[in-house]
Amino acid sequence: MDKMPGKVLLTGGAGDLAQILIPELLANDFLPSVIDVRPPSDKAIAFTEASILDREALDKAVAGCEMIIHIAAWHGIHDFRKEHDAYDFWDLNATGTFNVFEAAARAGIKKMIFLSSTSVNEPYGLYGHTKIIGEEIARAYYYRHDMKVITLRPRAFIPHWNATVYKNYIEWAKYFWLGAVHINDVSQAVYKSAIRLTSGKPLNEPLTLVVDGAYEYTSDDLANWDKDGPGSTFKRHYGQYYDVAVADGLDPSLRPNKLDHSLTTKEIGYKPEYSLKSLLEELAKFGAAGPPGPSGSSVVAKTSV
Ligand SMILES: NC(=O)c1ccc[n+]([C@@H]2O[C@H](COP(=O)([O-])OP(=O)(O)OC[C@H]3O[C@@H](n4cnc5c(N)ncnc54)[C@H](O)[C@@H]3O)[C@@H](O)[C@H]2O)c1
Image (tube, rainbow, N blue to C red; front, side, top):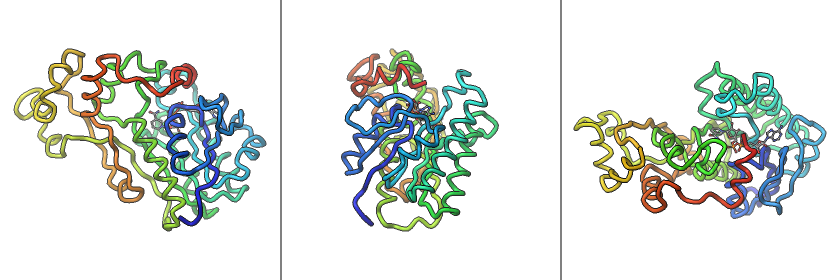
């Protein structure tokens, strides 16, 4: 480490990701603080109640910070549900991201983590387009202000306990089934990025890292999916869970898609832990209700979309 991890500002630090991330940052000796338009569930965390569109408040919140983790954004669910329009997306995701990087530059902050998304692969959607703009801003500040920047591109990770999105665990499981990443693994990718930025190891270019979950299925399984009949690939890996999966309306013949996160593993030591096996173990243990979320999550869930 070039020096002890210091104060880290989380924009959007009252949301789902931050709720998991803050304890991980504290456990790794970082000092998290939050700027958000609503309070975080952990009342002990230093908190600025303000929008990142308020430049004066943002300048105050970034003062004294060593690093910023820029999370605040409208994301896929807000686009899908038409809850926010093009102006909203532009204001928060494009102007808001610019404000955060510019405030960081003015305060001399050199370590930045930007939460982008695999939605950059849908460049003409409201969300994907503004994340591309965000990535461009992050890149420009790396070169213009000599900032160390890591951009993370997670795929979908809204947790099953976010009751505004998933009506129950099974609905979430159906989504995860087709390929997604657990929020705990996204949190791991963020705090490992924070550790990487404080490690003293040079960053020779701005890093852009895909964040996917863990899989038992091999590339060969996916290329030759169900060659012995519907459900056969699933049965080979998870035979003992076949009946419980079918009983809960999950379809073993559905093939997930898997993303390459080898660069993420190489650069920050990311090793996702949650896989379809984890989900099936939870299902067997907790039934269709699923495991409990973190405490206070229902309060966060009510206002997070
Ligand atoms: N959740 C996913 O599936 C997913 C997938 C890929 C990428 N991402 C990215 O991860 C990040 C957030 O994830 P999350 O699940 O924690 O989202 P979330 O919606 O739970 O949290 C976002 C937070 O931003 C806050 N916010 C909204 N407007 C603000 C403003 N003007 N100023 C300050 N804060 C404001 C909200 O109050 C909320 O607490 C986003 O950048 C998103 O694009 C999410």
